[in-house]
Length: 396
Image 1 (cartoon, rainbow, N blue to C red):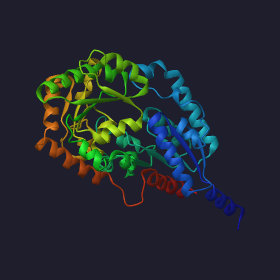
Image 2: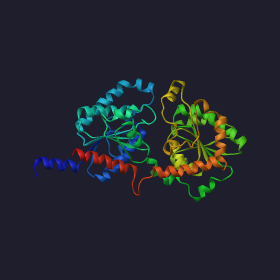
Image 3: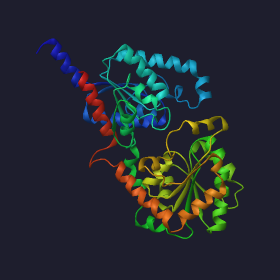
Image 4: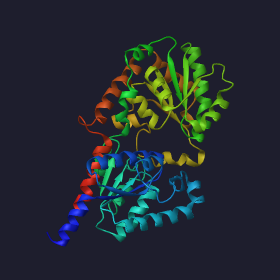
């Protein structure tokens, strides 16, 4: 074999993947991807940017992921010099690493800028984007722009490949949402199913995982629970709290006349999900968790007046993930001025009672599970790894 041929064989034996994740959710996806890559390519070599989950899989991050994990216009502006510096450092490190493929993971404001720099410097480098930006909801022109620097998008939601096709975006494949691997902890057993019919019923209150969400929603949620108790009767209220907001939540519910049971940690949270009859939730990934657990829900959300303009540029008929996946607004949502205790209570009482509203959601959530499912034996991380490996192999 020629020297060039030996080099190609060595390259194939040790595929090099550069990964860039910019926040906790991306770090979790990146860790799963790294495990799946090793399972399929035992000699794979990885480098890049990630957090604690990717570090446990062997990644030595170029810098702390917290440097780039910022949200909101004001936060980005305040940290702009550091972000610009980190973009340049990441691109330069990737070029020195000489990867077979670049995998950017979520956080498009950061990762897409890195991708554009690498596409300009190394046009032959395959670039895979793990998690589609919400081009289907707002700024749809981003889809076509992505084609300049991204070769393949790995979608977590089943409708996203068609959205990219319609909008002229890059090739896009549904690889599955990581939550579909958690059905074992979301699905109630026989005893838990019976508990859903217990008296008083268990009602979940989920005011969000951000301080701004809790401060805007929790008072309305509390007032709604009071109205539910006066209209429907006694209910057991469970409030799962993320650790960094537990103190804030406890302080804000301290004067409720029927104090909720506050739980922390994933195990307690999902145990409550499996026994819950209905949930009052802030819009977010938790609505998908509830749907996969077959918990009927009512969704609310409020933003600041400065962010209120977004309603004029959002192009989807719902902001609730189960509704978007199903293609129908089966979950009621109450946004901004519509988020009032009386409206929330009315919708919740209809879900607590046996009737068409409750039955429609339960049937819809079964369809949602079917839409999100993968073939037997497949996992989202495994399917993602296969596409990353294929992209890197095509360059070899």
